[in-house]
Length: 311
Image 1 (cartoon, helix red, strand yellow):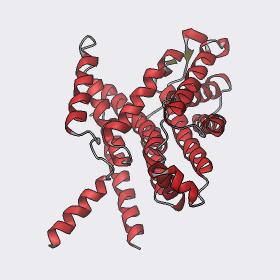
Image 2: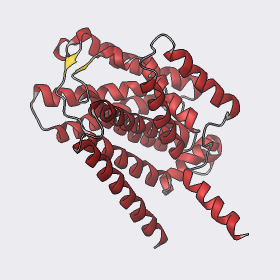
Image 3: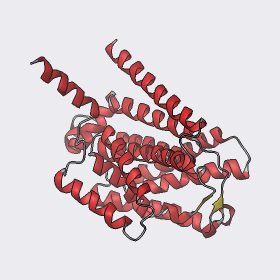
């Protein structure tokens, strides 16, 4: 009963946030610049949370997330631009294609650990990028022109769906199995947990939502290019998770929001942008090496405060 009340409380809060922002966009209080920043923020949150389930929950060091972003982006762009099918269907099929790609990569590579897994996933992302780079059907190196179909509604509810699914998965029996793998894979295997199965499942779920983000990302601009999905994009997504705190979903969300705002406002200073961006990360890592939230969720802070008040 208590969990049900909490769920509906969050649902009402999400609807209020959506309605207020939508009203501000409709009345043009929020102009196109800030609207685009909000959509970009939502995309980054989806990417951060989808990688969180792989690194933060399951403890698998993957740096090929840009590959799944690219699959979702290009598949959805083909469906809307070449096949002239509806955008919601393109989002679903783009996410499904990314999930299938995650299974194809995950089944053979997730038996690896540490640096070996990181290299394998990075190699996959580069293979995907090179395939799109040399495919004339999607424009090759020149890029592919895409219809502008993304909006605040798609981006916001994409974030809600991503957080809802991954949060529920983490708190389920399957999520606890993934956490046990993160803490001690040998012990988890000794207790009868099928470690490879759960790693592949978490990887596929993360890939699905990266593809979902890719579909919205592709249709938020008028062109997508293979260079956008290079290994630096994978590192950007990795930074969200590490900065937020490994194992903290809300930390990943906060870091994605924070770094999106920083990147947006530093866009006017291209010469010093990366220097300032790097300094911000260094300072945070020096004074908060476990990330902004560590392994805690933002709800844990409220629980702590309530407990302290009763004493």
